[in-house]
Length: 248
Image (spheres, rainbow, N blue to C red):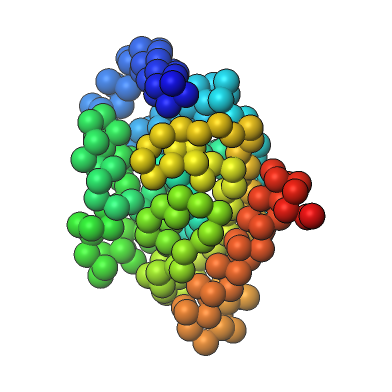
């Protein structure tokens, strides 16, 4: 029943949002590609906010903490990946961004269309050699890139190892890397897409790891391990905040 109610709430919220922005949405689609992508990203950002702060509110409260000291420079956002709701939770950052996703979200009705118009990158289709020029162009427009380097949802509090690609890209382009942490949604939904009871979902943005810091590191592997450790430490604290019994 909970799963059904969440789906209904999210669907109604998205439908109302689309009705409200139907005119600007249609106008946006008529603009040149770059301007269309810009406005589509903004419309998608506010749709995400509507989902996490309105549609999900009866079932879970989302709390965002910016620990990055107000850093605003565009860069690479690296997040742990516990559940399918992570994609919506990225709206908590309030930034214009694209996401690097596996192929299946790009095939979804409506959401896949939106993702393509926003300029999201399909990791299964985009050649590795194309990433530097694409990301460099996005950064020049003030657009950040969000990646989930685990590659797949963990479905638990455990964090899987990271893939190295996004860290090689950050080092090549000398971009700030923002470690980002999510806790509380590991069963919201679970891997079977069933929504279980949860009270709060926490989203934290940590201070960026800047080029002048990681240029001293010998490889992207070392940077990857460093970011993984930062996220692991913070999510452990967040899990304990949500589950005080972990201190026992």
